[in-house]
Image (cartoon, rainbow, N blue to C red; front, side, top):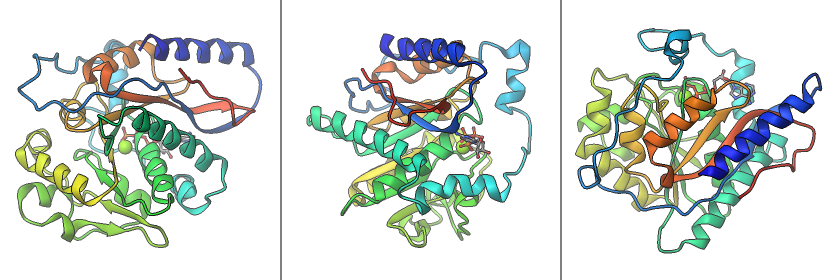
Length: 299
Ligand SMILES: Nc1ncnc2c1ncn2[C@@H]1O[C@H](COP(=O)(O)OP(=O)(O)OP(=O)(O)O)[C@@H](O)[C@H]1O
Ligand SMILES: [Mg+2]
């Protein structure tokens, strides 16, 4: 994982050199392949630390995390369309970056056939780092792969945004499935014009952490892994909440998103420690400004 920090440091150095230069804001893969580890059943692993509060709590970071805040700024249609770009324009630059990420994950999977990579959790340290954007982009380009059945699963039960981002109007969702009020088949929707299936959140439950840590959540992931070649999960932020750690432990690997020039490095480090660094498949620098779209970090 030292390589991840090296990549972050190099990014910081290059940003410093480039300060004042322009560039295209886009999601850019900075993937650090590491040996994936199989998921470990909760309770069988040594006690792990609870997600600590973020390091800059005294400087407004809790506000950025949005804890205790009920609403946030609504996306404009233009912002929503930016997310959809990977779905709608397979030849776009953004789609190309997500294809790079998919290829890196496929390479890791091929290199470690003993550890199947079917369920991939997408999380980050803080709010608004680009988790949902990444989860949508990665699942969209993976679904474009020939013959791959792909499910995008929203596990942000506190502030879900997959349905809104993709213009879906679910009748039931993840919370209803976890409560036993609906089956997964009832809740899965197909994104029009694509091969991508989505299991969105419809209603926000009062007990998200409890539902995500339940046997029902494990059953849902087993169902997803049985029915799809790849399952991409959109998680809440890691710091300050137990949800991301609980869900990521049930997955085969984690894609960790860093918002370029925004996510504090100490929060990245703290979050990676919480998640268990061995689970990190790759790190995605979201919003890094680059002239050359082929440029990326690799181990
Ligand atoms: N590379 C980017 N360039 C410009 N805007 C971006 C980029 N990535 C994400 N955004 C915008 O930033 C906002 C947050 O993105 P997103 O919802 O993907 O983050 P998130 O980590 O899922 O947030 P949350 O923690 O609230 O779930 C959205 O309005 C999104 O459109
Ligand atoms: Mg999100």
